[in-house]
Image 1 (cartoon, rainbow, N blue to C red):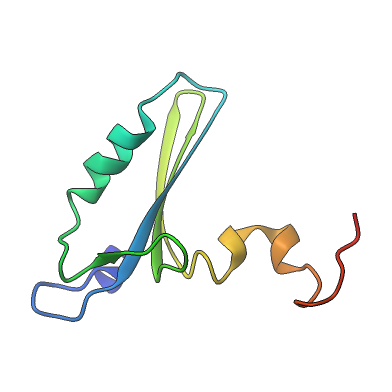
Image 2: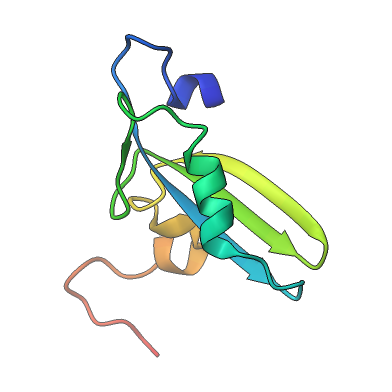
Amino acid sequence: MAKEGFAAEGEKGSSFSIQYEARAGPKMDRLGLIDAIATKIPTPPHTVNLTSPQWAIVVQVVKNIGMVGLVPNWGERKRYNLRLVGSLEEGEEEET
C-alpha cells in the first residue's frame, strides 16, 4: 500500500499528513516522532497537506504498543470516525 500512495522517484507525488494519537501510555515527544517519519518521505515530489491529504500516516500509541497505518482520504472520510461519517448532511442540524 505504501508504494501506491508514495510514488517512485520521477512520478507525480501525493499529498500527505502525519496524525499522532497516544492513549494511556508513557509521554512521548510528539513533534520528534512526526519529524522522524516526515524525513523518510521525499519532498518533492510529495507534499504536506494538513487539511485534506490524499494519504495520512496514522501513528497510534496505546500503553506500550505502537501502531502505524497508511490510510487514503483521511480528511474526506472524516478521520474514519463512524459517528462523523454517518452524521447528517451538511447544512442540517446535528442532534446532541
